[in-house]
Image (cartoon, rainbow, N blue to C red; front, side):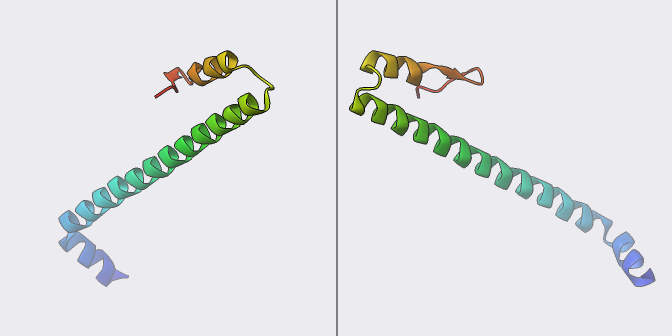
Length: 78
């Protein structure tokens, strides 16, 4: 245990750089997963609306309005 503490104190700069890199890497991966999940959900909704239009449950105008509806304050109509 003493050897570990000594090694850490001797290489504190390297340790801090590794920790910063780990935080940046983790943040990047989490953001990518969230973006992929969000895009997947949006596209699934678009396909469902298209299916409703195709079967005649809703009109194309209603489908267009649904696609243009803002989600979380952002316009989802790319």
